[in-house]
Length: 340
Image (cartoon, rainbow, N blue to C red):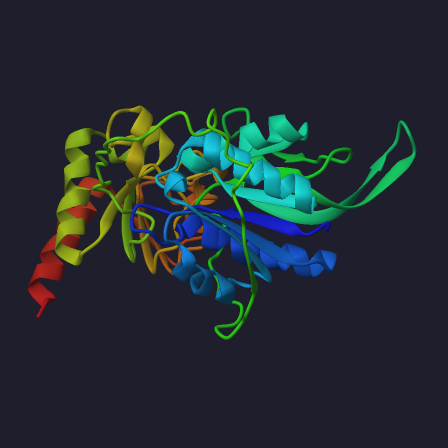
């Protein structure tokens, strides 16, 4: 009991979603700090071969529920199974990805167990809390850290009185790390008899059509991101031209998205995606803390900006002072001239 649990989402490719592997990596660190075990919950159909994919990320116990009724995801069966596991195992901490599945499932579990839930966390830490009114000290709480008020402040939320302490975590904010390629875990197969009732399984999915995302910013090794300083949607085309030549993806700041220069799927920052590319070229981006939180782990950063004192320049490895519409065409020409 008192262990750390991670709900592992099975994606369309019938493998474990990246956000779940990231949470396993973080969950392993939290479990080590608390001196407890890390347990994974995997629900689906034909998922026996997924257990070896989870073990290297530090899971000590894997709860497998294998049934045709558990894939594709449906709210009621998954909620019934996860609630059953949590009531039996009584976790101290339970983590879900802030994906469409996690955002649907986690609130139902929290409501059923009458416990707290913090959504869209960007950081998780273990710490103590002293309540002045009651002079009570709580040890080893989960600090659930997330942006609030439109990203203008960072809130640290605690849940001292109920268990489990639950949080959904955005994809990309935790680093996916293999703990030990040879790590082994205990696999527990769950008997679903009596857990999934006829009422729970009332909905049947007859046919599904899934449109795959055409934008893959998170996994791109090179990202060219534009901000409001790019000036227009037409100028954003220069970023796309350079990206096509060097094999990059185009990202955007929130200000650029709000101005209509780029699609929301390209937004990087606290209210967008978090990225860690080998090269990040920031074009016309001032570098507010909300944007830096989504890209400051990039291996190398180049800033193109007319303001030499822009905050983005403080974390950039190289700074180019100039207008995007002047600099980008020169970069394209030089790259074409020197490419082999």
